[in-house]
Length: 171
Image 1 (tube, helix red, strand yellow):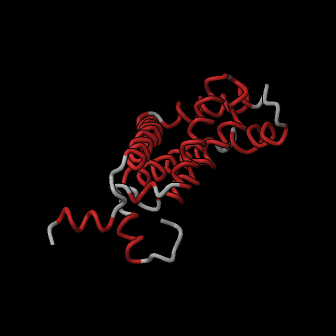
Image 2: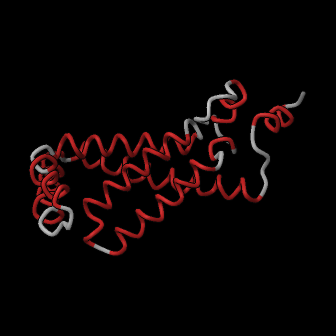
Image 3: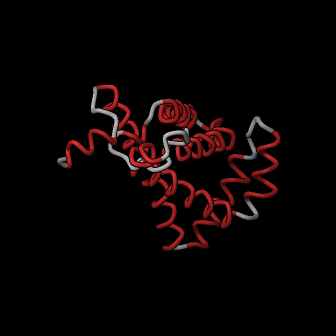
């Protein structure tokens, strides 16, 4: 059996719908990886300035006008004083979501993690700009598509996992 025949057995055939899901998955992966690696680069370059700046943004900008009192309290009382922990966790999570989507590995779990991150961003900063709200809503919709469709089975490692463990709905 040739390699092409093996791949066809493992993966979803490349129909127009499957190709669309693949392109959306790769665009989302780029967005998450770009955002996460940019934060990590800033952390490694000048951590005190980066964390200090974001601490001020959390408390003075996002929390001050935030319409959600629980999020304003969280930003003021936890995120701002612990900016280094919060931003580092955000950056690592963004990279992990991006890698999951890029490789098509645990795509549904990665998409769910992305949705959680986008919801946090909406609650923290969605009120600051229509574009901030808009891009996060669009990403949530696209990631829901990744969860509903077999997004990782199109040229992804989830295809191999699905073939070996067919009863597990994670891939």
